[in-house]
Length: 582
Image 1: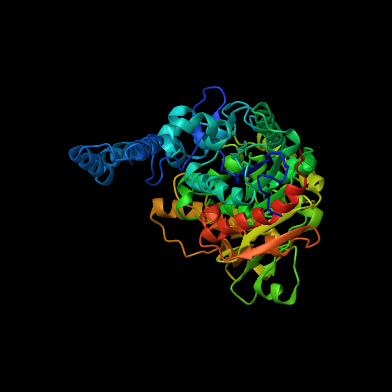
Image 2: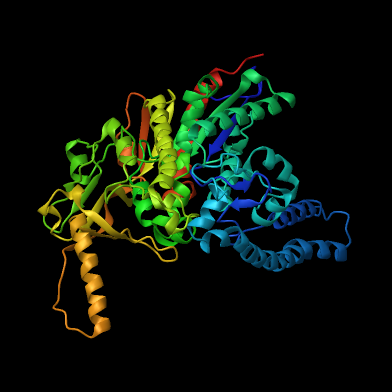
């Protein structure tokens, strides 16, 4: 039911609160205040805050020049020329090239520590900077960076007049290159919403969170922030009963929002939740990255190889909560057609026939697998948790401290997912993409001798974890410890023969090489379509869409944006019915 100015309703405030995905929040060093995570700052060319302010000022000047009635001919021509040949704005655009270039150059200090750092430097930046006691995560090392005035002016297109307001609304806490355009666009839709509900306001907020900590912590922060937004609106004259909240999330932001609603007690204060590109029960891609580093160009920042990734992700509680959990269901193309789903997501292929399951137990047992370090396909290599230690220091006793702390983090993951228990806010909409290929399962691919004995019994003699080179997860395997010992003896004898110029007949040992690949199905490049198709239809309404953008830029897709507005409009009549009348 549309509202009009005479219906007797008090003005409503419909808060649209956006929750970003993992690594979508800007982080700073808690002690120094230095920004340490915003790799996209300065990326791309767009209006700076100063340019946006100049355009707004110029627009106001032109409005004042509209009347020519009392002007002389020359004055009128002068004003017409000023309006139509806009030297001021043209000059401002020209001079904007300088700060644009500056942004490109100033961007480097924000990411140089990531691009040019090995595992030790990365861990020190964001996980634990204490080299003597680095077993666990340093909880207070990082915090959310809300953005300074200088940050807004240099890196965003928020006008100077709005910086204080947008800072309070949390716009500075999220990656501008990923979400800034969406926030501005969504705020611009306010006039469309007001067409049916004049007098109401639809302010847009964002809540960044520290993704190094658990989504439980993020949920508490979202609750506190929303309470702060509401208190501010009440202080400005809004009726608290007429303030309604709609949550819009991206990727792991869905976990954070579900934590706020289900675990932090925000359920009774929310009207609608819209999840976009949410990895509902986790995604195999994180296992993949623990062994190979990130994919594509993002390797430079997120991790070139297993060593880079483990030094950060091995301590990142929010990230670990993205691993396939006990409820994860793999959905391949053939399984989708017959309506079946499987929990199994880790396979090997020796070049003969179909993929074969690795001996991993699923359901509640999947957390035990994450805690195992003694198999060649284990997710974590313990030594990579301790990049600050020299090779000669890596004794089993010392590594035990690291693995014990890691196991505690996995235990926390299990407790977290059990607490969520597959629950959702009653009015939840999930938007997911089917336009790109995403990991459905992980597959180790290699030689054809692996089946000669139990696959778990093979021993690793090398992993591709080099600090300064891209990794693809390749492991070199031998059949047993005895074979490894024999290989070392042969190598030693070959050295001795070379030194003494003696002939030694060729001797070989059985070696297998396996590289981690993935089975790909429809999705958004990161999250596969099963994350939407496997949702309980009695609790959630899932909508498939062929998005034009991949996972990280999901909300920059015009189709997605249109769907978001449509879902908000569809919910407004019910929300409006709850508004207190005069």
